[in-house]
Length: 110
Length: 115
Image 1: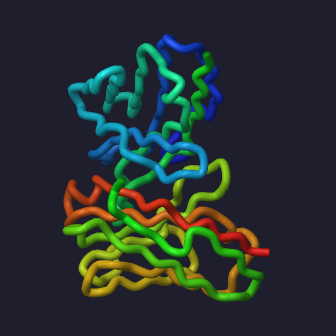
Image 2 (image 1 turned 135 degrees about the vertical axis):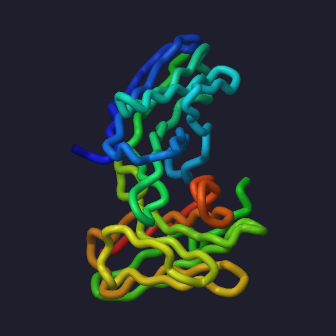
């Protein structure tokens, strides 16, 4: 089983739609979880941390289920500018600080 | 912008050559991590430097080596380049250890092409 697994997509959604991304991770000892956004040919940028209680930042909501080792990201009222690849990231074992999934590509279309 | 800079932005090398990539961390950050991102993949952890010492290493061969300087800037060196080394090399800076090390801020990357 890969350390962090994501549906690669692409997800093609119309503007205004709600879209959800899911991610599973294998290391039950992971303590920190994040969603990063990466635009084409750019560096990853931290979108939000994911807390056990779930957290929301504007149109974005992240959830963590430790029992199922599952993380989700919900984007409401999608904008064209949300088009990007969304990377699920968890803290690694030993001295590997972050383990990235392959990313899920989102295209929001007018 | 994160304040993390990398140079050069693009580089073309031939197999067998050696390359040095550079990274300046965000002001106040003392930890630098390097990642390799192949096309269509997520970034893969190469190694991390904390206060000038290697503080963790991913599954990369010894021909990938690094340095961190007293000002916390860092270099990634790759010897005996192979075609599969073609990728985007990302540097990320963070502050300290413990949970803070996970709040990483990435530079724009160096795109290396090996022919």
